[in-house]
Image 1 (cartoon, one colour):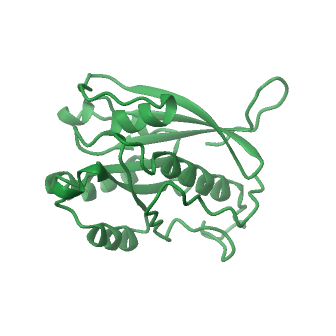
Image 2 (tube, one colour):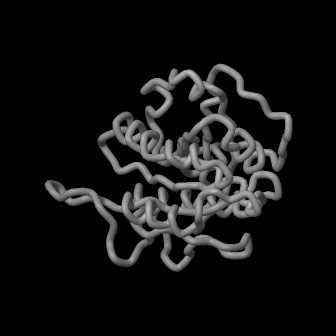
Length: 221
């Protein structure tokens, strides 16, 4: 959840983002690429939970993203509700070159929504990683877009290897969270999005790193 800080702190809000998806889809490298601009071809799964942070500025607000990685636990179905606790955003990752990882997406989505905080709508982005392996593609972009539309998810394809769209993915979901968390919900009314702000139900189709998240609305976080 967002935390407004004062005094000597150098950021306005702290948001927890979780990475979920099958083992080997590149979650750890997405984390290291975004937070340290590093990529390791020899990345191996480890048991435990890892997280890293990066601070960004979006629409005049400084946001510190605390990004959690399952670090191999998904191999053993050992992820607990504690992993999801406090998360306001999630990247649901599959490998575009491995159909089996895409088939697991619906299960991961169900688990996420069952364990996410019920007090607010978690922002979820479907991420087709390893777009550099387009010559080995087993999951079409259109198929993934349709799934995202059906389940009201953001959508993007990335490559942690060549860094394509990695920053854009994280910047986009953090901006969406900023909008969602800052929008008051009237007492007795269901949570939702107004017509003038980006919506979680609008898939993001970003074909190059040059396209930036929607900056047309001012976030009143």
